[in-house]
Image 1: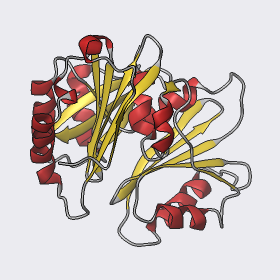
Image 2: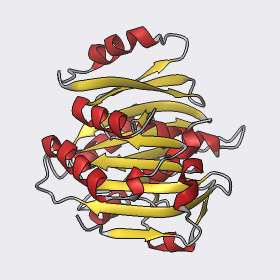
Image 3: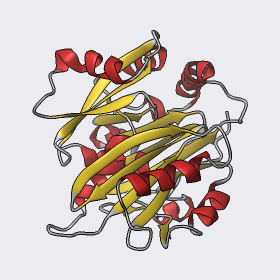
Image 4: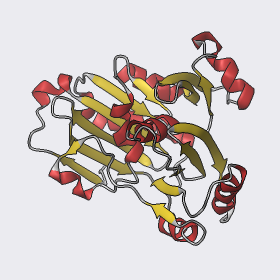
Length: 286
């Protein structure tokens, strides 16, 4: 399989890969991975394989296996491995209420989780909660087989923790972050340095995204003039969606590469908004 975007910084050294962090994202849009040198806090490798619109969820395990067989980089040893598998099956549980043995109950209370899905959970330290989510069991097994002790993420974690990490104490700016997927989108609202909302909405019609976004503004009584809206992720109509939102909301931004890291000069080719969550995972762990 030929990557659509691929580069390796000249400082990358396969002989010391066991000191590097590897971040992977797999979804219907494609398979992407990047390498961070934590000593310099610098990203030094990136690769993305775009999938056709005809790719189905059931095909992702086979495509993932194929890429593991074909890519030498993915078969190197790494110090830590972070896996992002976007999913709508997710909920946030306050830290004071969360117990690992009850994670599945929390998720099944809020979602009809398919039988062939594996329930996982990740701590959200700055949000004082736990992200409980479900991902396809076959994909979960492949990554467990490929790497010792991979850390799994759902998109709510990089969407929220990275924003809270750079918020200044006492800041009152309200942020609404939209993360686009092929057939749904996620909404996160941060107000006064606190997580106020995490939710996902299906996109069935061309006006669904606008309707649900304005619905959130209305229900939370957010100001379309003062609230900053950021759009991340990937969608065939990304630019059209952004222009439409700008008709209703004054401050609509398309973020670049996540702050808090250094990047090889080669990363100037990477659309930061599309891979924002992938490149943010390393900042979500201690």
